[in-house]
Image (cartoon, rainbow, N blue to C red; front, side, top):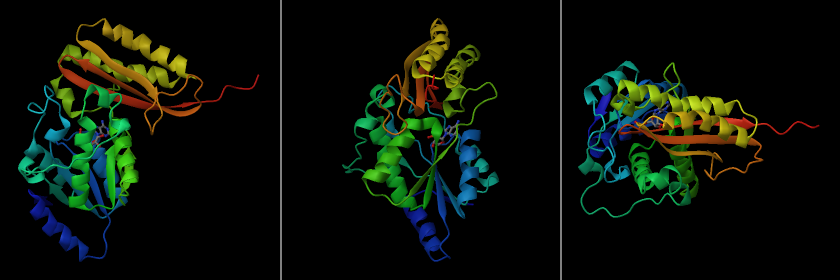
Length: 287
Ligand code: AMP
């Protein structure tokens, strides 16, 4: 496994690849503190190409003032061991000054999709995400990039950017990996106390209940039954719960038929958690 600590070092490795018999380069962007969710992306990457690149970069541009940039877990040594064990070929670990040298000015605007729901709660977040992802795509030059469905709106923004800016990279979404009780794995879960961890389960529990319902209103009601109970706990504060179009993230109408994404976000103690599930609303049966 090769480790590149700067853009220049990576460029050297990447140029060497161009001399080989056109290997498919598959890329997994991460912020590190790798868990089984990340590992599932690496596993999927290995099934899709020959050269697996993982980046580890906690991107300051996507954290707002007062968010958890400073305390975000950083565990590079452990992460490198995970990458080595999982058969990653190149780990790219740039520094902040390498990716954001003084004098930089141009950023990506995520548009309307980037300013609703998660984007409304975290202004500028998706502009920061798209800016770093575009930079990383240009540096790494992969054929395929794997992104987790855990961050559904992020995945939609990246797909939108690929379309709108004519990128030639293929984007593959990977299913959410969960704890046995349903909680979606996240690098932030380590911040949860035992009692917060118990109430954090409400997010996936609400989605699970919603997913078995036949209509948008029934799904919303089933989810709120769980979420209202969680809100009785002082540590739990719901941010949003919405049933949206999987591409535009606009709320679907009450009579919606077909696929929709149920997205939820909540603060549990000092930790912000997000989750989502896909629901296929069937047409009403003929009477
Ligand atoms: P992060 O390190 O949180 O930026 O995540 C890096 C990538 O891993 C993103 O594409 C995430 O959507 C994905 N990811 C994070 N948690 C999970 C999970 N529980 N299951 C699947 N993918 C995940």
